[in-house]
Image (cartoon, rainbow, N blue to C red; front, side):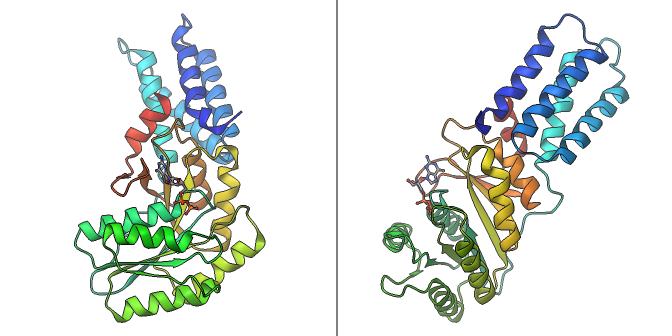
Length: 296
Ligand code: GDP
């Protein structure tokens, strides 16, 4: 079962409830069990699921199935609201400060959409009037330097990287130092992702974090990653101080159920979603429309 099915599983649990003629305690328990199972398969922690089920039951009791109101609609609304709560880690999204160099470090597995999202975010800040620059500290993947350079040229954003220096920590530090001296207000550092969650990758991330001292670390995750979402996000969170999440490829078939796991694992808010391959394809995250899509 792929995690992308989370939305479908919850939708069908809600539909099953809608099909049953009577709605009573048992129907609600069955629904909550199905929703809980779907979340559990999505690697959302058991603690969160139990809390969610408890919240929903309490909420339904509170509303006491108010006379005359459509029970099914109330139940759907309560489930909807609880899913939104799961997407809220309870911390405000990080914001850059004027008058200083704000350093943002991107982390995530290879292919997640890091390099693409670095340029998208840099363009976002540039459009808002911030002096922005990008640094390519991915010295592992052949072509990473050219890809970011190409994007930087297209977006007209200053860029630092090296196609000869193979030390990502040194390249990251050098790039950040240059742009700090230049007075850049937003400096975004792209890092390597390699193929697997290798120890070496996390060691490298820690070293880069130590030298560039990021104000915000953004974890980039492919929305179609499936059940691996929770472990992957946890592995990055355990290595570096992840503070924000970007979910990419939301224009694809995936409904992005893994986003809930990413929030739970990193205790960080989703700030943007990637909706295409091009520079403007970056949307501010909106929990309501995300959950609507998840359930839709
Ligand atoms: P990285 O290895 O994490 O740096 O990943 P890349 O930025 O190179 O992206 C991997 C692939 O995913 C590329 O072909 C990108 O064009 C594509 N990609 C990245 N973000 C999105 C997105 O939001 N939507 C779609 N459709 N493709 C994306």
